[in-house]
Length: 200
Image (cartoon, rainbow, N blue to C red; front, side, top):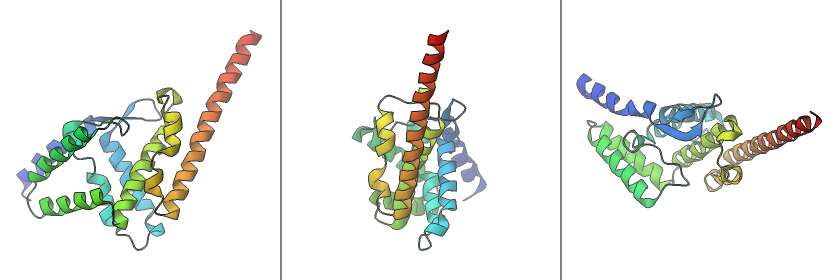
């Protein structure tokens, strides 16, 4: 890849730093797609010892590029995404990869095909972690940013994708416990505030 091609592609994917997701940060602002992909990649790096037969370098690459299409389409929450949206994102990815020189174009197309097929251990791990990063973000965000449906969906989201591995299933169960504690604490705080208000 020559320097001009390199810079041109980086300018395109800079939009991932600008596109915001449905998820919020602990400071109460929408997170960017790039922030999600960054932490997802760190999650993959940090669980390498739990998956000694998995090519973690490939998983990290999947994590870094999986939302490339959103540089063009923006983020659409999973519960709102239609087949039409998925086609748009696939077309955006196809266009973006078409701008890459070889061997990157072919290698990344193969990775996207592997991610979509979700048959390899690498693809299964990437997808499970992708779902769990979203739950982790919700657990960190103020409950005031949660939609009513998310109080239930946060506990069920990604169940099928974590089931292939005891480690990812344990991660899901632990994050569910964290979600329940967060919800319970919020209810306790509201009850305390109401009680204080009555005394006044």
